[in-house]
Structures are given as C-alpha cells and as structure tokens.
Image (cartoon, rainbow, N blue to C red; front, side, top):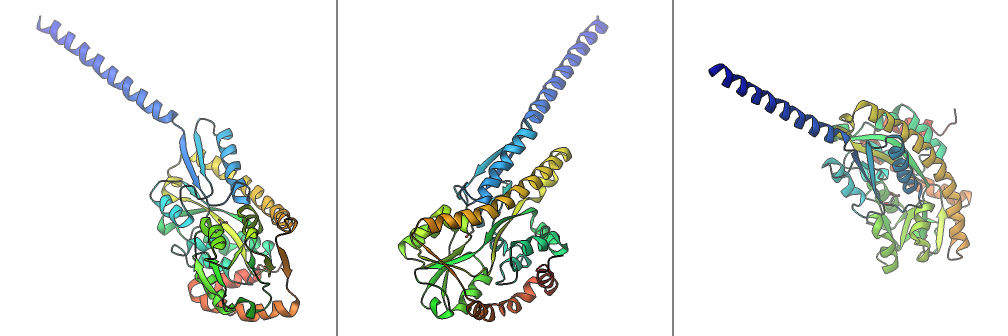
Length: 340
Ligand code: SIN
C-alpha cells in the first residue's frame, strides 16, 4: 500500500516537474521570439541626410533581421533634443542617436577637433581623417562613459547667415548668433565680434523669427528643411567648418546583442553610411539651389582677401583648444587635407 502511494506521489511530482519545464520553455521561447527594439532619436527632418539614413537603417534592419529586430525612429526632436538624447541613451530609453559633433563635448573634448574653423579644407579631408588612425580611435573615445561610436555620418560644410551680408569681421558687430553648445563656436564668434546664444536645433527657426537670434550657421539641408531662409537674407559660404555626426549606441546594449545580430547590424550600418554620405553631397547642392530658387536669399562667396582675413582671425583658435583635443589629433587633421 505504502509502495503504491509513493508511486502515485512520484508520478505527481514527475508530472509537476514536466509541467514546470514546459512552462519555462514556453516563457523562454516567447521571450526569444520577441524582437529586439531599437529606438533611434534624432533632431532633423526626414528630408535630410540623417533623416534619410535613419529610415534606411530601419528598412534594412527590419528586412534582413525580420522578426528579430524592430526599429522605431523619433525624428525632428519629437522626443529628445540632442543633449537629452545622449542621456536617454545612457538610461536605456533609446538605443541609437546621431548628434552633431558639438553635442559630445561633455563626454569627449577630443571630438571638438571637427568644429575647429578652417581646419578641414573640404568634406573629402574630413572623411580621410575619419578613416585614419585618430578618426577610428575617436569612435571609442566615450567608451568610459558608456557611449560607443558606430559610424560617422556627413551633412555638409556650414554656411553662415544674417540679414546683412557677412563679408568682413565688421559685419558681425551687434549680431547674436545661434550656436550649438560648443566652446569652439563661441570662440569663433567672439573672434568675429558677434554675441552667441546656445540653442537646441528645434528652436532655431522660432528664435530667428522672433529675433532672439539674428544670425546662424548650418548645413544647406538643415537650412532648407527648416526654412531658415524665411527669416535670413544673406548666406555666406566661407567653407570654415563641417557639420557631421557620430552614430552612437549604448555600449552595454551593443555588447550584449547576440553576435549574429550585432554582425548584421554592423554591415547594415556600413551600407547606410555610404548612402548617407552620398545623399549628403547631393543635398548640399540641391538644397542650396532650392534656397536660391526661393528668391528669398542671396548666397555670398568671399573674395580671396576677405577669406584671408577670416582665416587670420579664426585659425589661432586651434591653439586655444590644442590642450583639450591633443596636438597629435590636430596634426592628423591637417595631414588629411593632402589627398593620398
Ligand atoms: C543636426 O544637424 O543634427 C542639428 C545641428 C544643429 O544643432 O544645428
């Protein structure tokens, strides 16, 4: 009798064990089947190189990793401005962001190299620097803060605007320029004789409209997509600096991804980067032309003597930031101006 009861008890135990096992397996499978969510926040319109890149990333990731990855894009600073986005990335509220270089200042002083006036002669020089030793290292310069750089995305050379032609430093007197949160840009306008107002990108159009700021600088795709030319008449192309981005992720999130998913995402990012940079070249030309065609604005090209005056005034800024950035990084940037 006792033996019979223990057999029954055993069979109940076994059934319970099997049942728990099945439930655990079910839960594990359900979890494994859940796609990994990648939230990508950025501040520009979908009609910019970055906006286009974010959408292309979503398309390719969801096609090639169907059922494994889901991507949500938050464009136009709908959720976060750039500075907030970097904190959101660290707190796990988003997984991808692509702020312009100036926004990384609290995490890496070295990245300021990209904003030094007249350091890079053109977009090709910037790209050569990014592919070189210093450029590759800068992608990892924020790892100690938990931020990993995945790629560089281009926009284009910056253009300065105001409601008076900007040709000589005298033209900057009594103007208030919207700047990114950048000590380099602050130094640049101080040297030119203008005041500066740091302001998130989302507020610039309103700031110009209300007259809170009376000048700004940006790439053509941002100027056109935000309609800055509705409130600014003269656009000076001094080719003094470049607007670009670092595509970044939360380092822990990236490391903890399954290796095959991380590998596929890496490939997709490389492919998207090529497209973004191609699109950036095209938009720099086409959006410039659209602004001209609007008949609201005039594009100013500096003469050689005017340009020389700007250079004399602005290149000493390199020295001011040499200790923060590192002389070897600045030297590699200078070398990148020579096509190899
Ligand atoms: C951007 O292109 O992401 C915005 C840059 C800015 O703040 O002007």
